[in-house]
Length: 262
Image (cartoon, helix red, strand yellow):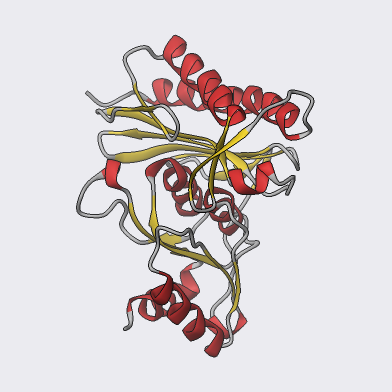
């Protein structure tokens, strides 16, 4: 059964409120007002007590408001159903634990396979990016849009990399991008970089694989801000995630061709 516009509006408001609540707690951890320890899940892949505590705030709040919805979090897992929330409590944990102010809280809502709500909150700058399908993309109270860039050699792109990606392929693509005159950055928090594409700060974004809790909210932001995105997820379904290409319309075909070329 499709959710009504009222149901989606209610979920949007709850997602925004929970993101702000979680952001208050996240700032306390970030500034070490609440002590925590960090653990390594793998090479340069960290998790902390802060991640778990913030995810619990989000999980509990969603369960109280919408007990029949499914929840999938990066840290605590969960399941995917017809109405699913996908959540990363701290995207950019490596930045977070090193005191670098480039991390965010990412909340996406998918209904019957379609991205409906996306919230990416940057507590460090008090910027909350949010979107609801068909209602535009916003940063706090201001509407946002993707850039008007039309040429790759004028573009500022974000290209995400984590150790699970193929290093040789990443370096080869980065070389091709730089050879085309593209400025390429990796700020270490995919969801926030996607939000910044939606806001026109980056012209595009690429990562060979993103989990749904990192990708879904930002992809909807870009779509609602007038950008184009590669079909997501991949053939193995939402739980498996997939490749992400997203950009301003003027460079999407050229960026996709460059990424896909061998």
